[in-house]
Every structure is written in C-alpha cells, then in structure tokens.
Amino acid sequence: MTTQHSTTPSVKNQNGLAIASLITGIVGVVFAFLFAIIGLAFGIVAVALGAVARRNGKQNGQATAGLVLGVVAIVGSIVNMVIAYNMLT
Image (cartoon, rainbow, N blue to C red; front, side, top):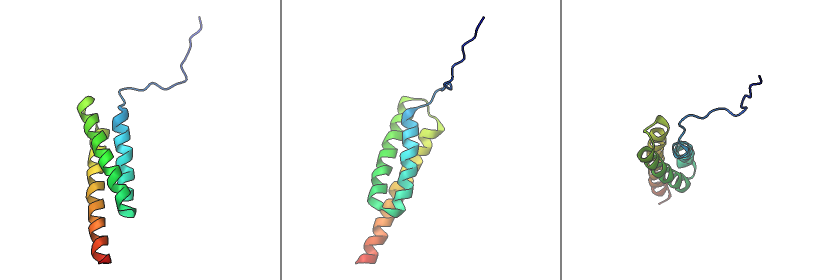
C-alpha cells in the first residue's frame, strides 16, 4: 500500500488581509521617516486593511499589529511633515 504525501505545507487559519496590513504597516513606518507622504499613504492602507481583517476574520495578532503600525506610520508621517515645514519656513 502506497501513501502519498503532499509537498505543500498546510496553512491553518491565515488571514491574507491581516498579513497585508502587517506588511504595509511595516513599510509605512519605514517610509514615515524617509518620505512622509509615502509613509502616510501606507499607514492609511495598513489601518484600513487591519480594520477589515479584524472585522471579517478572527481577531489575530497580525491584524492588530498591522493596525497599530499603521497608526504609528500616520503619526510619524504627520510629525515628520510638521518638522520639515518648520525647518523650511
């Protein structure tokens, strides 16, 4: 009797929106201090994806982390813009 083994790993309860929120949140935080407007855009996307992921699926840590990182990216971008404006005027 032969047994077939699958070569693909089994994925359990992963939420694609939560992962996308986490990734955009990380990118948003990085860009918040390099290019504020890009960091702000990524932060807004991360917050939106995190909120949808928390509402639709179970509330896992990835969605929450993406949501928090998105907020940090938004705040960091705004602070960076204010500092840049005050230095240039």
